[in-house]
Image 1 (tube, rainbow, N blue to C red):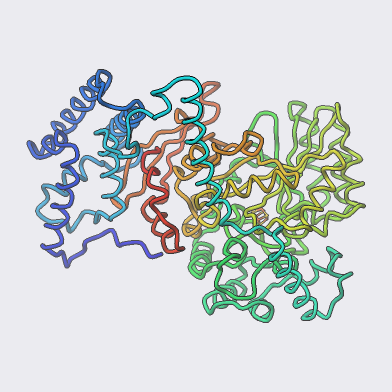
Image 2 (tube, rainbow, N blue to C red):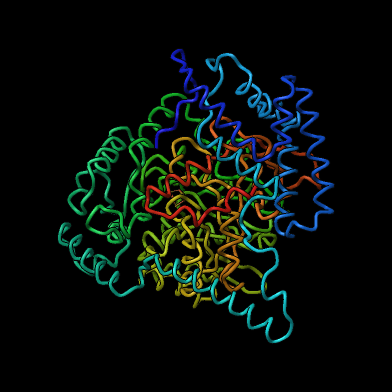
Length: 612
Ligand code: SF4
């Protein structure tokens, strides 16, 4: 979706300016004291003083206010804290922008020519911040829940009725999401499989051979178009990607998860996972031409002490023996270093692999090694065995995590012989081997991948899931539906990651507060055993920030385009000195607009504004 331009430009329109001012004044009516503070003086220092005075008296007053419900009181307190932080000169320095000065400019500037244009996103943020501040969120129609007015069985019955209502609402939304284990979907996939086999003139036996799939990875727009219907834009995007050596590929197996028609009714998450949007391809070309290091969003270069190793924590390291995958996820954070899908040159040369393994051997503090890439299960059984044997000889390595998406993209890879190789090194009480995979949607869960997961589980090897939270799996109860199904097939939800802050994947990104809302209003309704994951923001160069704890971050500004700036605290903040990290999120308003365009009822998300 195209963003609104930020500059008024030379053709400033007086009508538009007057409309903007009126709109601002109308929103400020929510908090008359702040409106008065802005209108009584044009001095920023005086306005800041007045804002602060008002916020501290509001804080005191709400402590004694018996008319405010306890939950509304919490929202008021949160909004006060946020606005105070935004107003501080420190925050302004960190982001190079003054929210207060901007309000001042909108009210007093003769001309808007040299200031950014406030977007609907900005006004929506301001309005909700002020509503939160004044105890007017409107979230709670009553002050006290009915069950709390009674005792004993009556209270229990009322409470139980409330919970049943909540559960029925959740169930209705969970059931919206199709799963690859549903009988009609299984039948559709069987037809898809036959079509693909016919195209390649192959047999069912070949379909069960993972090497056949890697030999027949769909690598260009023409082949894709011959196998499923695609839109003109999908065709152009894939064509342009291949022309410009942007990694693209889909395994025949994963292609069989796509519905034939391109309406994305059920398979939107599957298509979005591997068919790049046109603007993504264009942006990738532009960024790569400029400077490829800008694409290393996670600053892996700054955390890689030796080729093949990444280290962000005291006791765990990442070992990357191969930098390719059987297919490429559009939002892959390693898109700057993956050259091509299933490329022949992607394995770390033996001498470099040995050097990386020696590096681990020299560091007895390392208890856990995450073998990832790329997808390490693309390596031969011999190479996998070689790596596991070397690591297993180190007494200090007590856990080896294998990060792989093959159970989802190429379940045929989980052969009995691979299982024999891996489980040989799994020695309960001494060393654990575990699998971390990457399911994104219930539509990806099939009988084949259930079988692959169960092979690990039956061998005592635990399987966990890391979910990357994108627009395509972040609708109400969509991730909850996935977690429920994952647990049923033997996969434990482990992490839910915020999508990385890269421009080319803006379309996929979800505001941080949506993760918080999902955890509090959706995951929280599931039984504890099905909501075992942790929501995290991976701070570039530093490591995971646990979003669940509000004390691990601050909202420090709201920009004219409605995007919030956050200051993330490093995970080791009370252990030793480390930097904080300033991050600009995607706009909540834009995200909701995108959901709306997908047919979603955005009123289901109305509380999102009151998370920070
Ligand atoms: S599986 Fe992981 S490493 Fe491979 S393309 Fe997807 S996100 Fe990137």
